[in-house]
Image 1 (cartoon, helix red, strand yellow):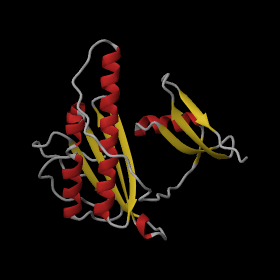
Image 2 (spheres, helix red, strand yellow):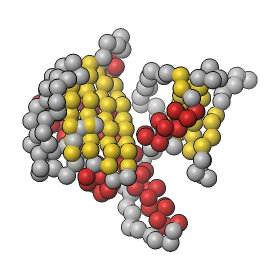
Image 3 (cartoon, rainbow, N blue to C red):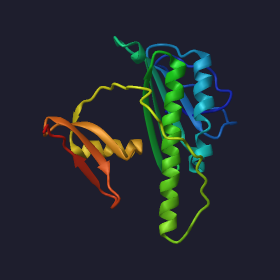
Length: 205
């Protein structure tokens, strides 16, 4: 993830990231992998990701790294990959989004991270409430989707359950779909209310 600083200049391909501007609250670094990121895309990433600390104030000193790269993919919507990592304030958020246009991939990654930040904030609130220390919490209401508006395809590599747990913790999700290396099949790791994890292993009936 790249540190976000208002007024930060352009990027160098596979080179050192531009120096952060002291005027921003998040330290955002944007890097292009084997190509130069257009100034307009870099500025868009800074504007979108610079709002994350509005959802989760603990992120005000976080480091945000943004890696953008073109992909050799047959599907048009897989042309660009935007990978964002946010680390700071006790939170670690991550998003990877593909799209036919860089701006769309940036926007999608920003939406995913905003959702993760809201969920992390809610978990902190619940934790504090359980300790008898309620904190003010306001969550914007969102209408649930009424139909399938998007189908997302993604690469999946075999991994162990322990590796899947590391991934779900880094992403902040409640479930994680992975290829169970030992079982040789797709499985779903999910977070249980008790705080531990469960694994769903589908079987054909």
